[in-house]
Length: 103
Image (tube, rainbow, N blue to C red):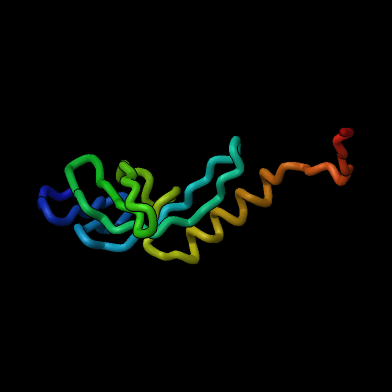
């Protein structure tokens, strides 16, 4: 990656990350049933990592440059496709039985 402080470009990915860029994080946590696309505003860019802040709840996420194209995308549609595919593959089976409590 280049040594510019405000912007990094990884030659392997061909994508650049700059402060105040908008990226999309495919947040997939199947153990608890979380399948979201988060809109991130990049707030910190360093040599080996970058930090994005969620636009809605202001949660900060730390990423390696290897996460670009895997879970972090420049295009929202790519992130959404990744989340929808993961959700379809990890859908929990819900019983259609109804349980009633006795009083």
